[in-house]
Image (cartoon, rainbow, N blue to C red; front, side, top):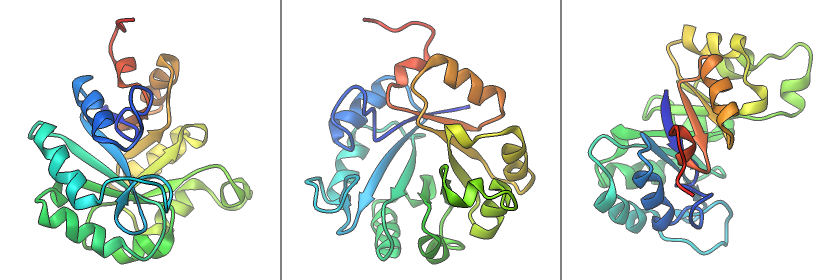
Length: 202
């Protein structure tokens, strides 16, 4: 199971910063997740201060081990190909999974990069005739990023049958991590990557 730091390690340092990435890497993650907002700024919300994506990636690569993966979360539509181009220019596109719940963004990236559809609780999930598997298949994405409270064995099996992976977010307890592993998730996203270890230094 892949150990993934949420916004770097949002529980250990300010989210979506190089400090958070450093903390996640120090905790031994396999992947780091970070948000890209409109304007190619690394941050959760448009207008919030953050590093430009090209500068952020340069600094991140100075810290990253060669096998580190990147889960790139797009927060809105309209700048998908620019995000991909910035990752290609930095030489990390093949190590990236681009995650979003926006169908237009997925359409822009499917076939050009590895994508993951983000699914959380809501009207589409709760409707009796629509399953997570239906949403996943319709998205055209390779993988699925599921909020932990919608993860089921059936949803995981549907993604696996299509050759994809399931990433569960945001899981901030050891018990939750164990539950996601038992359900067959391929990766777990947490604010505190130290939870993956048997002990935590206080």
